[in-house]
Image (tube, rainbow, N blue to C red; front, side, top):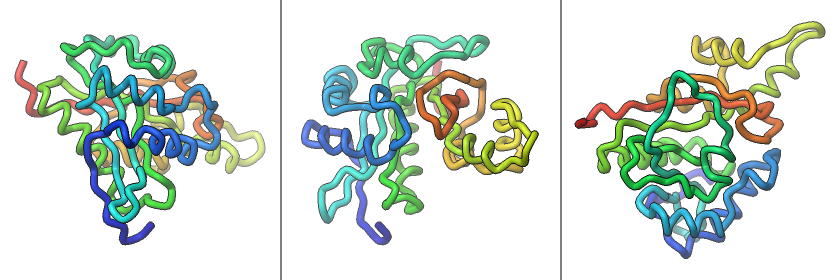
Length: 219
């Protein structure tokens, strides 16, 4: 909604139903079991309240964006392959380690009618702010390749495009992916590929491992 006054703030219990509704709105092709529900989000607040934020339309108090995540104690960059269900403990974040060195981004999403207003960047900035405030090494996340299926459908007969080829073209700037291109503009780097990350046909179940290194980290 153009011109809306939107505020990013820490998630609270009053936002839980709005978070669940937003997940349904933002991910029509994603399997239901991959979506964060109100019960999941309530547990996230219990475990790591500081790591959860929302974007609120001040005129209606509607949840129009969200950021969710937890802390990981360690990550093997040499063996980055994992699934969303695995790393998030089936979305309950029970692997959260209060002393973990990395913030793992479970999800960032913005209502389709509120996109292209800078809300996504504000949510990524809130994520970076959490990592800085807690002095974490950086932020990890699975960047869904939301343009992959559409690109494959656009190819001529007999043409193919592997996940590796697609990501390389996005990194080189010869292709634009709605999610990964934006994440790279927000300072994230591609550090690996996960070909069975999440059940969503729009990305052919694939994601890039993206990483933002905290420049203010003091080890």
